[in-house]
Length: 320
Image (cartoon, rainbow, N blue to C red):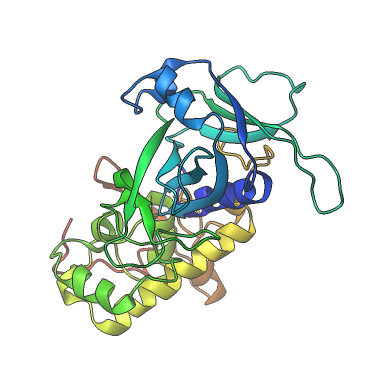
């Protein structure tokens, strides 16, 4: 499933190609992909058609386009078009005459626009989803609990969709508080990786980047959170931010054709992974220090954890 860097890559692409444009038509090709819009397909299309996209925002793995209703009174926007990518969802910018994707679920026709060089921009936004775990729906916006912007975006409005209000801020969010994170993770009394995957504590981190951040911080996934000192949590934050920043620069992590940017390009951070998916391969840090240690795969929460047994020794008081 896409994690923070992959969703942020998509957000940046959408912000470039979609912001300021009006949705002129909506075609729902598969009603299952708008099942989260409880009022049905017609209501979904009616809410989106005619609206102008004023911003594209992300918090953690949640992504939404703020919609301005041309018939509404002046004031802050009230709704957003949320896009949940699931395991295989893609948002692609295409020309109308481009071949229709096999798993096309929703097609939005956008108003005409030009890029900085005066070249017309593609006029369709397509939601493609092979496994149909993702979807699109219209959500009401509400004030953020802390008064800060809802997430990463250009407008900085202190609004967030109701469906995303329960998740914590992510590490790349300007309003993220390291002090609050330190207090809350110590209060969890659980294993470190389990805490990092808790979207109510810190959002956007999944299995891949948790393993990469823990490898970079030289911490075992079962380290009890209530034993973490402030330098430990600072090291976790610094490591996770570093890993995700590098992943963003590489366009995210793609293991197959299911994850892509809005132009269909894959990410290349998989080439730079240090732990995840490298079981049986040498730890590059140990190799650089003259040791021969192999990355190990261990079972964790019905999935896998990858670590270096030398760099990340298991604590005596380990917690799952």
